[in-house]
Length: 497
Image: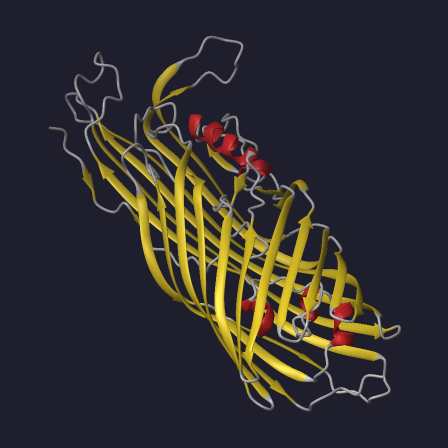
């Protein structure tokens, strides 16, 4: 019976609803959040600052709103996440940040409405670790007869956070039409670390140790700007809106990237000329670099959203959709060639060794929601939305290329989540004269998603630095969340003409 000790095949995960490759992770506004977020067409909510600034002119009450996904239980399971039969999974209880939005008081005759919002569009923390100890057939029996003692281990940590501040202006052209513009400044911070090691004992006279390892450490911040132009129409029980968000403009950003790759007593090809026959021998190799104060670039795409709302004062029905354009591959950081490497003729480019790639595929998300007024003090809401991932599948091929030879010129990619998420929400709003309190439950799930393997300890080879060939694993994702919202109205009407 083979000896298999999987000491730590688990993920200690704080998955804050969404992931690092989704746009519609959270919905904002006390009313919009309980309906799943279909607010582009108009819900008379402060959240219009974010969804469609033109709608601010139709908001009847000057108010301040706070809403949050207070608590949630998230569960993720990656089948074969560390190799065949080595599933990686866990569940985690966590809390999520609060968002604030409101309108600036104005004179009744003023056609200009000003609003603001402070939101958290992305908050994602992910931690994973695994260890495998198991005899493996790695080296030819001529050099090492029988199975070699083998140990493989990895740790993987990442945290992505974005904070958005928006100031919006809306001008009411007449009783039916309005236009608006929102200025959005987004601060993104990302910390990432990865450690991977493998050890093998040769069955020779000296029980020689063969080892490999890689360490990656990345930390960067980026400040960017996007503008959103909106138009809105309202007539009777119907309203509609259209909004266009510009591609982001980088304002500033700095980052630090470090990477270290080592191999001891590993069989490698010492022939630098690929046209000549290879010369295989056991040798030690090392590649190391760390660069600080690198200029960073992070991009968000052109986005176009539209929607409509039917409101007969008792029943509200809303539908919204938003298309996000694609972004071709670019570099978050572009380091210089200042690589320490031994032997010095290693086929490594220092400017690529620390490079971080990113790209986004085009996605379309749809939301639909209903609110039903039960009595003047209580209304019930429900909604559904898609939250498709913009993950670029080209990186799946890069994982395979990298695992064939760890020492390569492939840039680093930080994306983890690649599955589409579906959100269902249900809740109620309790209204008083000058305040509303909303409470709801959000269910999020993904079925038959995929995840890049963190590592593969199956069939390790020396050519792949004592690791197996990384591929993708099937992922199931499930999350329950508690939503809470509070709105305080300063006065009953804004005196619209």
